[in-house]
Each structure stands twice: as C-alpha cells, then as structure tokens.
Image (tube, rainbow, N blue to C red):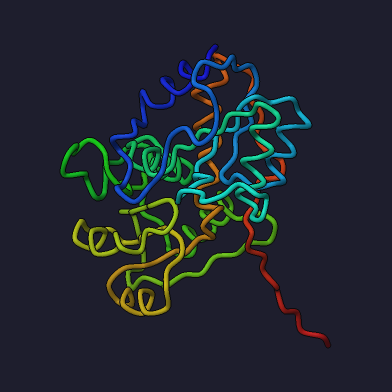
Length: 265
C-alpha cells in the first residue's frame, strides 16, 4: 500500500479535523506516495524507537504523540527531534502521528481505557462544539457497583507496568459505578466529570491543587501519562494489521521512573 492509503485508514476514524488547535497530528516525515510494507507502532517517537524501526526494516512509524510540535529552524542533529528526523529521512522511514485526533474518537484512547476496566457502553465526556460525536474523555457505568479499593486494583491490573504505581484521591462513596476516563493529561475535564455524575475520574498528570479540589467531590485515580495512553498502539494495530505488517515498539516506554522506598530492618 502507499502511505496515503495508510493515512486514509487512520483518518477514517480519527480525522485531522478532530484534533485540538494547538496540536500537530498528521504526517510528520515522508512521501505520501511511498510504498509501505512494515509499520512500527509507538506512543512516542524517540531515537531508540527510530533505531528499532531501522533495525527491523520498517518503512513507517505510527505514533500517538507527534515528533514535531513546533517547526524546526535547522536540521543539524543538535536535538533528539532533529536526529530522529535525519535518521528517518536517511532510511526512508515515514512518520505519522495521530494525537488529539485519536483522543477525540469515541472508540479511541479514552474508549479503549474504559473497555480495559470493563465499561462497554460509554459516551463522550466533553463533546466537540463542531462535532458532538467526537470530543475528549468518556463516561460510562461499570456493570455492577464495586468498592473503590476494588476499582483501584482493577485499574492497577490493567494499567500499571514496570513498577509504575497509582496516585489517588478516595471517594466519599462506599461503592462506585459511574466512571469518567481521559487518556493523557485530562485534569481540565474534572468539572465535566462531576457535573455528569461520575463517582471516579481516571486520567493522568493531575497537579496537587487539582487533587485537593477533588476531595469530597469525586474520586481520582491518577495514572502515569504514558501508561494511560499505551493501548493506543492496540488501536493502531487493529486498524493497520489487516493491510500491512505491524510491530509494537519494544523501545517505547514511559520516560518517568519510580523509586519505591523500602524499610531496612
């Protein structure tokens, strides 16, 4: 398939019109008419991921986070972004990113999060004014109410990797059922979640005062940013594997590491 055919498949569910105004989803590097045979799927485009794509003979990297948010003023290899672009061009590897466009698809990033904890029926939490069928976050109900601690364990089982833990603000409710979720940094959707009756809001990158403001109003489960979005690679695989060979990048991981203190007896 040519690259434009691959782009059309992704944009059939996550068109660029869905993206936020500040975003830079879309084709980052490459010729739209290039033949594509093998794609590497990743959350982030890093030098390690590009090196993996080179080693595996990939001609396309599909990422969630864009490699380029701002225009490059030079291409000298002085920054990781510049080196990624140089290597991609040198090895004829295209790079396509589907960021807030994929976030805004109902069955995209936040929808996949909901499915992973057992919520099958969900709706957009903050619909787009231009297109109410798209928007940020989702909200839905668990099949049965459960204790908040049980939900914590379910989320931990679904989302924690490599020792990455959870931060949380407990809910005043003994049991919870209505759950709002947003992949990535979704703290600005907390008031929407409260207004729509969510018992718990699951997202990433909450600041201290945002967590403080949630007390006695809504439970919060605060994930690592990368962990909240790493199922995006499943979405890409689901869309593209019927058409080309796909691999999930083994070098893709959260840049944040967690130190777990242990008491020495």
